[in-house]
Amino acid sequence: MKSYEYSPYDDRTQTLRQIDKYNASFRRVPASPLIPRPITLSESTGPVELPRRWNAGKLDLSRVAENGPRAVGQLIRVSGRVTDEDGSPAAGVVMEIWQANAAGKYVHAMDDHAAPLDPNFIGQGRLVTDEDGRYEAFTIKPGAYPVLYSGWWWRPPHIHFSILGLSWMNRFITQIFFPGEPLNETDLLLNGVPSGSLGNDVRERLIFEHGDTVMGDLSYINFRRDFVLRGHRRTPELA
Amino acid sequence: MKRVVSPCNTTGPYFPREFSDGNEDLTRRDGATARGEHIILAGRVLELEAKPTWNMVLEIWQADANGVYRHPLDPRSAEVDPGFWNWGRARTNQDGWYRFRTVLPGGNLRIPHINCAVLGIGLTRRLVTTIFFAGNMGAAPDPVLDCVVDPELRRRLIARRDPSLDADGAAGYGFDVILRGEGETPFFVD
Ligand SMILES: [Fe+3]
Image (cartoon, helix red, strand yellow):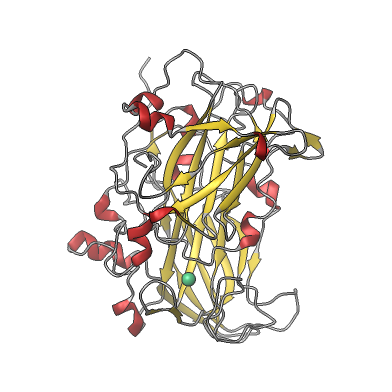
């Protein structure tokens, strides 16, 4: 088992905690400064057995039943690789994915948007990364949707990713956007990433790369996104 | 060359309820029941002006009753309680309440504690804190609790015995998470 060192997140690489017009951030982000603390065994361990708890495996969000009808929308395949800061694979970790359907509607009690549900689309599921840290899932391209509670704006198409990670410290949650979407320009959460040269790189890393198109019995478009989890290998101690 | 860590972002409002449901109970695993003292850890997650939140997600990570983590870094991991999940997740209901069933953690060189993370709308990054237990504070120092200097802030990290939360033979402990405003919960650098 590798032992990792964790540094606090570098703010230049991360989305701002408080974003102008994203009202909820001003009601929920603590006003007091965060308190520095050391990392002990308690924080550097974490839930490595979740794949077994949830029996997670392969993921196809584009239909409800195997061999059932596909959901309405553009069939896509999202894939990529999850690594740590040293580039070694985050193997066998659970990834949770959720998203709106092609009309921009979530299967969720809190979604008041007057768009139709799709009986062939649930829009959520889990998978486990392989020994090389790779993931893949078939799904449909989500639609845009309006935010009805925190100011008013339209969210561009995006897919939410949650990675349980190798330890408590590198648990990771984000959302990934599609290239070339006009609504990307005005999205509060995508543009909540700091600007500047490093900032621009950061924003890019919240957007899928448009991959190749696949033609065949199953035709779809590839979208790729790699993830880097916090944590780098501890330098081995000399005897 | 070191790679740059990916940017976190918010779960948004629609974190699937199904991802939480069933994970609030850490005390049953593979048909076995967790050893140690079963407890209910419950409370409300409140935003500014003590308004309740809905569908905020809490994740916890803790040692079993003997202080063991099911993880290769813990030298005692082979002794871990087969009936216990060290990890759990719950969500707040419309009144802001969350509720876990777990065990009182053992020490493992620290004051017994539960790591807690809050995720949800308004938070582009998770918030992390550590929950200790009244009556289980011991005399030893704790490297994390020691970082909280103000005694009032330290008090806010201690779950209190609350018999009104007792259920099914488990002793209730109350711990409200106040994200912002009066009585704000201390959170740690993540
Ligand atoms: Fe969303």
